[in-house]
Image 1 (cartoon, helix red, strand yellow):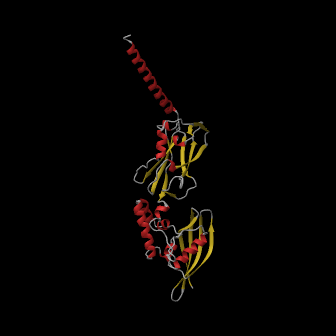
Image 2 (image 1 turned 90 degrees about the vertical axis):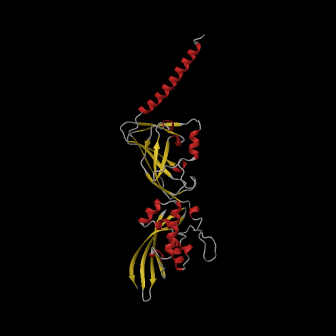
Image 3 (image 1 turned 90 degrees about the horizontal axis):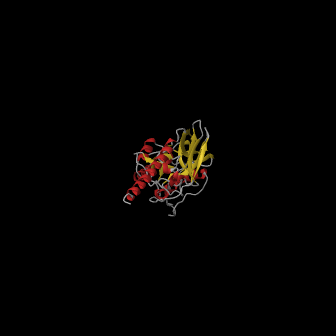
Length: 330
């Protein structure tokens, strides 16, 4: 009977050692699996303009492709809930990593059964699916981010086995509601709040030119992508990309003020005496409007041809670029 405690201690020691060895064995078996012939690539799916808005309002969809680049069949596990198979990693230009979403942290903190499938890919084949990056990462600040994906072929529990994708550059802009909250466009004629309408590209350009002829600045800027117009200048683009949210807002305000004072980009704010829309061409999201414009001088008219580039966002066409050709005088 005096030996019983020793036997019990010995039994638990043996059990602990067995469990520990079993855990080590699982890791060893996982580590022995060869995924060197697996390639993971990511690309934007139906790329658009991304804001700091919520995931469901403005998702960042990315296509994830797992390719077998070897000569043997590639086998891996893929969880039904893919947050147990992969991670998105985003960092700033200063190499600061963004935090995961609360929902993702909570989901992985709960003890639960993870259902998965074991997939097989033959040499030269690939398996692809689409994920929303905002389900994984919090984008609270507008900036330029570098985005990568880590894929866990043996699921998140074995995340020490990972495959890292290529890197994407992701621009997150201020939420439109936030960006416009301080300077809401109001009609100079009746004081009512101006809202852009779903009108055709030629009508967008026509209304913009007419607003400039009447010096109605709020209406003039209504269908203009001020950020893109400003970043036509490469130096401004570099400054803007490296700036904080507050600095970006100041840059946009200053750019609009400079336009109104005719200090920069004088061609786009020049006031024509008359104009004629010559051609309108557009697809689903991009287009051009060609306009012939006459500018009055004391003894002649200067004639120019403008090509306005337009882009559709959330059903609204906006001018984001232009070019000018001098046609001489009349």
